[in-house]
Image (cartoon, rainbow, N blue to C red):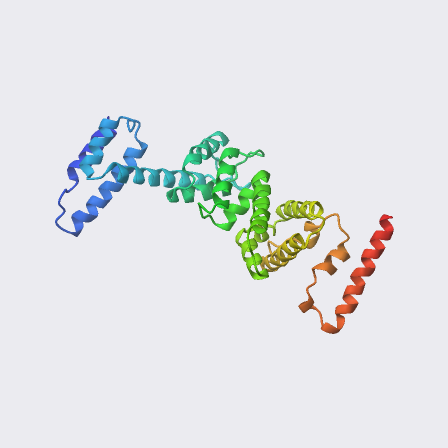
Length: 302
């Protein structure tokens, strides 16, 4: 009741015909405060009461609900960021069930531009639970919207999505392959552009993502009997991955062994050496060294 009284008092202070800059600024403040109070009030579900306030402010219903969404997003983002669990902070983290409920709430609204800050915050949020706290339906919906270019999110949020949800990473990789096979790409530059736009080479800087993408590419190579199209895709992807890996901050860069933990490490190092890193007079010797290692490994296997 006291909240309702406060809101009506604010409406009385609102100037329907502001005469100067001070009254304009006061109106803006009153509108913002009333929208916040409306969005957090327990009687907002009373349509008649809400309509009265909206009318008093000179808002249309569309204006009001736009402000309502923005206020809800700001409130939830603030709550999640203030109580982010980092493993060292003793701050009380938001309950897993609450975060899960928020993620479910977002599903039908995924493509709303005003919701983007909340999507990013949720994808980067890590509570104290060892289990995934975000709804799988939410993760799938975000991935689907991203692949269809219906939303734009920071790279860090997309990478976190793929690390959290293996099916989304697999779908993104298969989507890239399907896109490359079904498009008429006339040059390696066009192939590189499509692959780079997928963000997968950049995301593969994390070994867990790289190993999944690598496995899918390997299966595609085997299923197609090593067609030139698949070979080209893998070659271009590898070049873009190496560029992204070399551009990584040294503090966050993983050693090559993390990407190929079960492979012969001298061979791995030899294969990732690019021609311009070596004097031209050493190229044939370098290739012979790689060939010798491959022969030795085949003989050991046999």
